[in-house]
Each structure stands twice: as C-alpha cells, then as structure tokens.
Length: 393
Image 1 (spheres, rainbow, N blue to C red):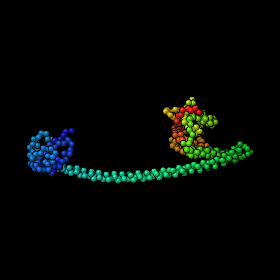
Image 2: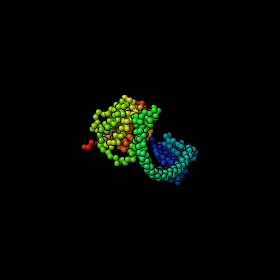
Image 3: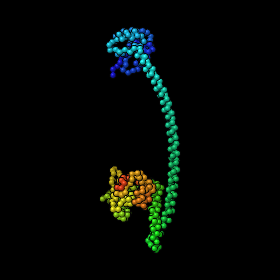
Image 4: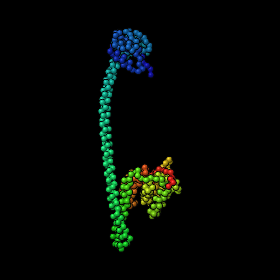
C-alpha cells in the first residue's frame, strides 16, 4: 500500500491535534508544517520530530511529492491561495473539512476513554470471578473429602449388607431344600395317591422351591464374589480347551433336552490364559446356559476362541435365540433385571446369572461385551490375558 505524504498549514491547536494523530498512523509521512508563528505548538512538535517547518507556504505548494495538504488556519483567502498554487496531483482538505476530522478525533478519544473504562470494569469482573472460582474450588475440595468419607461409610454399610444377605440366605437355604425334598417325595408317589387339585398345587410348590433355591444359590455366589479381596484370589495358567470342554460337558444334558447343538472350535489345545479356573468355569457356564435357555429347540450355539495379539484371547458364545431389545441392553447386567420376553421364555431365570458373570469378568480385569438383534440372537464375549504353558498345566 502507498505511503501518503502530507503537509499541514496552520500549527495552532487544530493543526497540532492533526499532527499528533498523523504521527501515530502507519504508512503516513508528515513532510511539512507551516505557520506564521514560529513558536506555534505544532511547529515546536514538528521540529522535535525532524519535520520541515516553514513560515511561508510557497515551498509546500511547490513540492510535487505532496499527496495531501491540511489547511487548518480557518482563513478563506489562504485556502484559496493553496488551491491556486498547489500542484495538480495534490489534494487539499480545508478548515471546514478539518472540523469533521476534529469531531472524529473527539469521538476517537471518547471511544478510547470508554474502552479504558470497559477494560477497568472487565479487570474488576475477572478478579471477582477468579475469587469466586477459587472459593468454588475450595468448596469442591471440601465436598470431595466429604464424598470420600461418605463413600467409605457406604462401603461399610454395603459390606454389612453383604454379610447379612449371606447369613439370611444361608438360613433360608436349608428350609427350602427340605420343602423341595418333601414335594419330590409326594410327586414321586411315596406318600400314596393324591387328588389332582392337590397334585397341581404341590407341583407349583415344587417349581417355586426350585426357583427360590436357584435364587438363593445365585445370591450367595454374588455376595461371596463381592466380599472377596481381589488380591487374595488364586490365579494360574489354564488351558482354554479344558475350560470349554468342562462347561460343554456340564451343560450337555440340558442342551440335549432342547435338541440344541453346541459347536466348539476344531482345535485350540495350545491356547493358555491367566485366570482363576473355577471362576471362569462359572462365567462361561452362565453365558452358555443362558444361550441354551433362550434359543429355540433344534438350533445351534457356537463357542469361539480367537487370539487377539499381542496378549489377549477373546471367548464368545453366539446363539440364534430371542435376542435383546436395544433399550434393555444397558440393564441386562443389573441384579434381578429380566426383560418381559426373557421371563416368557424361561420362568426359572433369577436375573442374577449375568450379574455374576460380569462380577467375575471384573475380577479378571475385563468386561462382557454384547451384540444382539431382537429375534435373531446374541453374542456374548469377554477377553482373558494369554499365558505361557507351565510344566504343571
């Protein structure tokens, strides 16, 4: 962008104000300042800044390098002389136009003053907000301490609740086992013939006893898991093949009763993992048992074992059963949660199997992942860390 070369004729108050403003502007050069009074404030300022000073305007009007002349004397005859004597390429701003500039300068000063006031207000507000933030941080730290204390208290209460639950379920286990044994004797005919209505009632009692016994067993397992100290759990090197084989063998009778085929990998006898064998047996059993109960008769359930380098093995159980609605997926691992479709398919479910499985997965530093499509089936999977085969494996 071109640099503007400027001259000022009249170095009184107005000319001085214009000079001060022009000296602050980029790409502007003030070359001449003229006033009949050699002691005018604008002349004094110009001398200090190395600008050419004049008491006659002839040299200014003759300078072809001047782009713009400010004539701010307020005298019409001088303005007329400047217009008559200036070079063709030089523009002239007279005192009338200069008043507009003075007005703009006043506005600029007013804006500057307001900005300064706003800056002071802003600084004060920032300081106030900073103090408020510091106060909020102190209050937050105090609440965190209170929360930690409350959390410790809740943990104590939860431990007490777990102990009470274990005691109560142990107390209930024996009576229900006895009731179930008595109903088995009646149903097997050891007490003689019984009326049809009585038989129907006893059958219902037997079913409820089985369900309650399963619930008590599940509650005890879950309570025991929650009371375990993770560091005290014995981990070792286990063969995935032996775990899968044991689980499939354990549930084979249930699968046969539903005409369900369990498909397992052809060969994975060289895959070993770091885990607690009994806990992983329970975890995989719960997943496979669910798959059997919620699959249609005659279908196939697949168990997959896949290495995921560098140090993980993924174990999956896939079925072609009823599937799970998307809205229920976040809740299926909650204790006692059962969707209506699941209740309709399997009345014996307790709502604890998946909660136990997830608790066991957590103990092993993993979690159970679910993919499911309603009406088409589900895939439950979890990861375990691989391990080198030991001599005792």
